[in-house]
Image 1 (cartoon, rainbow, N blue to C red):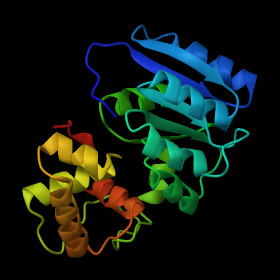
Image 2: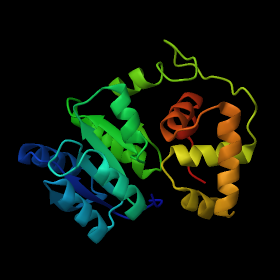
Image 3: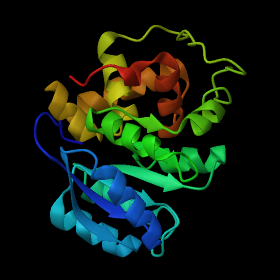
Image 4: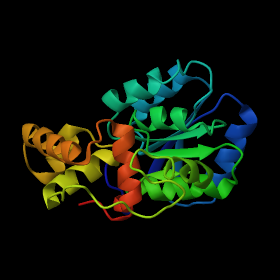
Length: 226
């Protein structure tokens, strides 16, 4: 997602239930720096609107008609790299959340949460961060694959990462593609692939969902983007 400073945040909302659309609109209208550019009710309409408007953020219901499982999210990761997606969902199942995060989604909010969670997600994502609903984060981090059970403590890396390896892995965890990371750091895509491979081999983590978990445990997602 592109950096946002003083410009107005453009947002697409997608939900199959008109009442939810109304509620989200009312919430977002409380923030002067936001502009809703499209409201849609299906996954295909969301995809078209995001490509047409290139919004900063898209807030999408994972269960709305036409989402085709995670297919729309996979397409957006490739075709709309500048748009950060926040998912609204009723599902708290860890496996499903991992699969959603692996598509490059930058926010995951439970529909049963208060409206403030959506606002917090928008603010976090607009600053280049990643937002997980607290109820979801509490399940994901303690049950990660790093031997972290029942604790939010940070796990030391088995082999120390270099500063460059750490920064590459952090940006990947934040949802950036290898090409975007290369552009931000001013190095080649091939170099990014090399740093990523070295880092994941050292940590023995080989999926994006596990990279995100590790980054959250280390606190990497709280620092500003380069």
